[in-house]
Length: 372
Image (cartoon, rainbow, N blue to C red; front, side, top):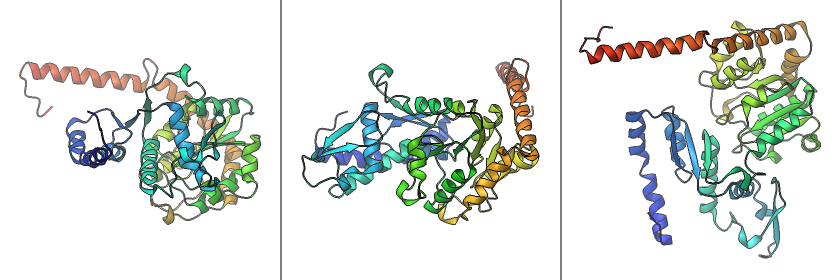
């Protein structure tokens, strides 16, 4: 199918939005393991999430173009550029020094609807499980997996005891909360790697004085905007603690890596998971979050001093911290045993497969299995 005119393009976008309802029915009826949809189908991210299905976004552009677009949407360089349409404007945060003429860039002041649409598309892609792009590594080597290489190289330069901070891709923070979290990381005295969602507030709204310089020099802090290779980070020998929202995937990954946690739940099952981590398993320390709410305005702001104290309790060399560290290492061993041949998880999967195969055999011979 080809869209051959501007008017057809508008009609096409409107028609695409009408696919949400049949797409919901398809997900409910088919229970797929995953879905892949065009990046322009931004609504499919939330639709898939409502059915517990991971969504992969397909981008028809290059990784280079994706990176340039992301830089433009995050930084809006046209806003501070000269009015001259031929003025050269730099796109920050890219491996190469990329400049475009001002007239070649989207200006949100002139195209607010287009800007809003692309911001929405970008946010939906960031919330997706992953992105599929029609390219190959050697063609765009500096742009494919750049975040992975940069963050791991940074960790390679650090001694054990660094802190990883991530609240997943769905958690929202108010600027005041981010400000205090940044203060807490600074006050902790620990090296830290912080994954921040691209859809969050602009750094100018929350960064404390001197924090940007702390990141720029690279000695103590490293910020990742968007997706991060969490499993590789947690399993890096420089990692000593994980500040987490207690989403179950993150919790299980930390346990499997033997990394103790500073817990900061927000909503869903996260407060339950915190209880498991802190009070049952004894592999974490709570910052004292009290409010169950997904909206960032509803949360009590936790002071930087409290955050720093929690990190210190976990990693400051106290008897409490040492006990938690040893317990985390022990659970790491148990987690790895569970998936080995003969381990509990390995055996459970095999047993369930055997039960399903036996059930299918009984169905084939006409046996009544309604009460089995």
